[in-house]
Amino acid sequence: MERRAEPRLAPNWTTLAGAVEGVLAALGVPLPRHAVMGLTGCAFAFALAESEAGAASPAGLHAFDTWRLGERLARTGVRFERFAPNDADPHEAIAWIASRTERGVPVIAWALRLREWGIIREVDQASETFTVDDLLSPEVGPTAAWADWPWGGERIDLLAPVEAVAAEDAAEDLVIDSLRDAAALLEGRIRPAGLPTGAEALEAWARAFEEGRAIDRSGNAHCLAALLAARSDGATYFSELAEALPEASEPLQAAAEGLRREAAELAQLVTLFPYPAGGAGALASAGIRRIAAAALRRAADWERQAAQRVRVALAVFDSGHRLSSG
Picture 1: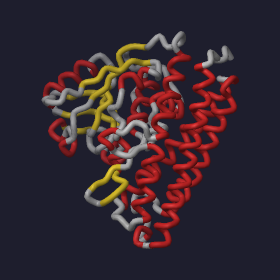
Picture 2 (picture 1 turned 120 degrees about the vertical axis):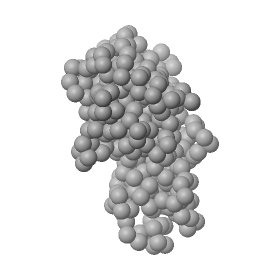
Picture 3 (picture 1 turned 135 degrees about the vertical axis):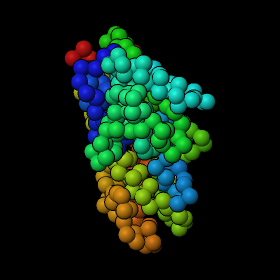
């Protein structure tokens, strides 16, 4: 698939979804952010990870990046191929990238200049650089040296669009699959690397605050901001589906309301722990830690309620109802 415009990383705390959205737009098959987030499951994924600095490492935001990735991305209407061998040689990976970009195919790459996803537009063999769009591009420009990639010793992980998926006939199944994933992710049934996820992750986060454990200050603020944005997109996705699925409208609207209530709890915490500083002295305050723990527990309750309503909607489809033609 060849691009029709320069691919740009779409604004999104979840950079995998932002890169996919940007590539889809460049290919002339755009989807709104909430649709990309909902269809791929990014709106519902979160794991609580720890770093040397403490709980709530930003690594938890990427715990699901490789989980059933091809299947999830194909729900957007475009099939992506992936290059991520365990023993990948950077020169082999660069050749893989160049063979795509020379044909006008953008490549999504992990850890170009940060532990985030970005887009490679071109490969310059003479200067041994990439032309990229990532979170650093507005500040330092689009040129990234081969020698510095992958950044920080991270894995090599590449994605490139291959072909449009004949999704119209399978749209019902794709939506239902996305709802099954949403319920499982929100419930915390899927645990990459054994990490707590979904509502369980929120409760584990609350315990870290209650027990006086170390909290990764910047990571905590990052996770809160990203989670607030993701759950807000999830609410919009459910609301839109409720309009398209009249038979399941009531439970899907209830699920959307649950995520909106969760987002309201998270918004309070984003105020207490703003990114990137994380709130000067806030983590040292016993009172603020109690407030944070209580808000996270309420958020977990709303997340579980949203998952339960999605299960009710899925039962409607299991009983034979399908998408509205409107």
